[in-house]
Amino acid sequence: MRYVVRPMRLADVPQATEIDKECFPTQWPPPPYKNDLLFNRPARYLVACKEENHAVPVEETERHGALLDHFLGGVRRFFYAAEASPASQRIVGLIGFWLTAGEAHITTIGVRQAYQRQGIGELLLISTIDIALMRNAQVVTLEMRLSNSAAQALYEKYGFTKRGVRRGYYTDNREDAVFMTTDTLTSALFQAQFQRLKRAHAERWGPALCQLD
Image 1 (tube, helix red, strand yellow):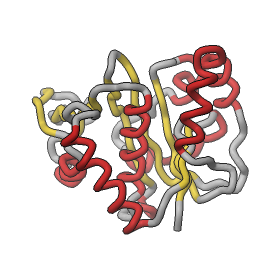
Image 2: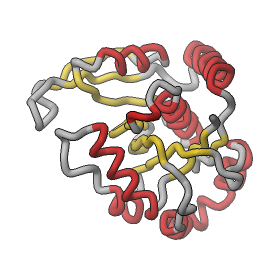
Image 3: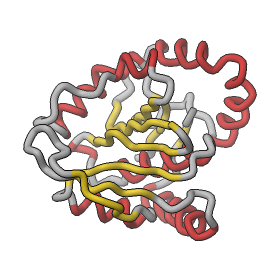
């Protein structure tokens, strides 16, 4: 099955909260999705959902978005966030990140248990890196639980390296977090690896439809 990746809307918040509670039951309350969508300009959230006909190619979205951003960025962001999602649209995963000072910092990522191991988390990561490149970010960073070796392996596959440990980072059990970052996104080495992994993901799971910004 193919999926759409698009920005989160206000109407998606209940499903996003469901995913957060399912994936992170000991970390509560969930992120302030509504406040971030309306008022937190650096924050971005993407959702993965079952394929719909309204999604457009990344290249078209980037081209038109660049033309409108300077004049209508804040207004477009407010009204797009307020659009209603189709009632039948099932959101299966999400990712959140902040774009600040040349960095895209991933704050959350989760996929419903019934849809895990289908390449959705990897697709959301790919989409985040694509947006980081569009927005001229230099690196992508994140923290994750020291015990989450499977997730660390995925990020290492995409060129993230461990740069430090943040002691007692998680409030539920005081577990340490490992801090990871990519090399410069525009470097030849990173780009060669990233484009190869994007192609491999599409070949294995099928091409996704993306409306990234």
